[in-house]
Image 1: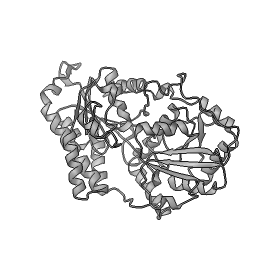
Image 2: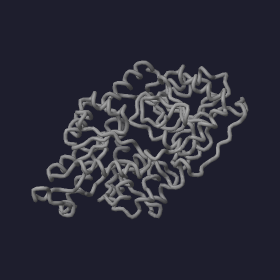
Image 3: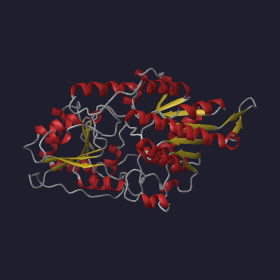
Image 4: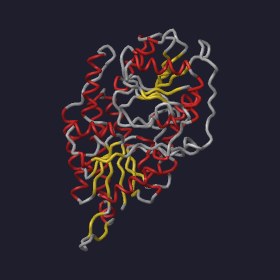
Length: 420
């Protein structure tokens, strides 16, 4: 069985195509941009975080189809038209789907040759088209017309997550900024994707529950957690950074709490900033790393306790993981949150919400918040300030367990493929 993976962006560091490539099941990766380090585009993007990470060395010998020139043209035209927000998201999704279908049509004779004889002697397709949610509809329609199997990778809990964000927006209108719910066609297209999918993969029990509440039949859904694996980084038992915590935290050497990712209401940032205000007289500082998607953020809390760093490249993110004392994820809803695995891979204890992938073992490699409230966040941080030796113990137990590796992902995809 061969898989064609359609992936808009560098989601999960290309974990699914990497997993399939390792076991010889990747037919092709179809993506919007692919920028090998030796390419001219890579040299042009050397100082840009937007396209600089659109490559993975593990897939250098894989068959990859990308649409670099078309993507640059799309970005230029939408920029000239001042197209942004949901109109741009929908336009990009449509653009990518058209490019994917056009490519699949050009390869139809080759792809249709991937067949085997069934139990009654009839030839059947041995091709799986795997695509991520919200950009899968047209590729799925084309695949089903040819008898291919379809697998939808659902990146979030669907409409249920939007409901949660809408409630938080109503609670924190001053921070909401330009947040708007998705237009009706966004969810209509998604429901059609779900109908066309032979199987839907979610990354956590939380995501599964949300998708079911969105109307998807439970029997269609399989849970496969995200994977994180970089060369020489993260597996338990492998040598990694030795963390040195002070005997006590002081104003001169405060506890460094790292938040890395999209800085928005969904991620619990309003509650985190309120916790920073509560802890304004404590020896702690909060590092906010990532694109800011809330309004008036820097006016909240004690400016000396909250530091804003903006978006960073993957290499720069590694430096923050290295220099922080604890990672925090007070999310209100996440399909998984791969940043948990990234932090653990760098030996960084994690304070996490329950409403995401299950990575943290309470009081083993981090702490689980009873609820993502400002009071609970503040208490979890106070516990870290009070006991540096506990942080050291949590750090020593941190790492990426085998169930979150690319090898484990490959095995689960292979088993799932056998059931399609």
